[in-house]
Length: 80
Image (cartoon, rainbow, N blue to C red; front, side, top):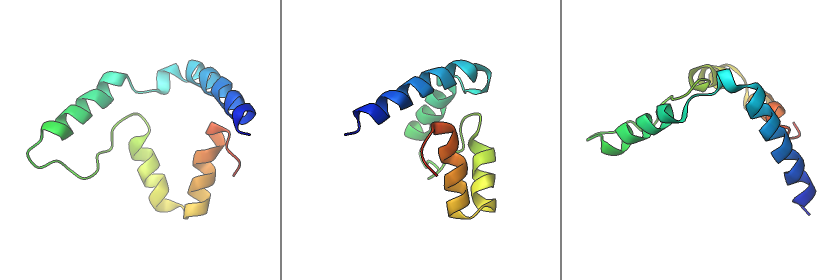
């Protein structure tokens, strides 16, 4: 049932990751943030890490939930 949908999404993901290489955060940025959170004596409950984290948080605050879901789902290829 989901086999054909997943295959198309995987192809889009591979293509999208190649075209957005400069916009993606390097893996070590996420790894360092995770390491700090795990070893912290009093870790924060949330942490904005990565290239798009802060703009997405601001966008989520500014938009209604349905509009934000539409914005997030379009690049991934999900129906809005």
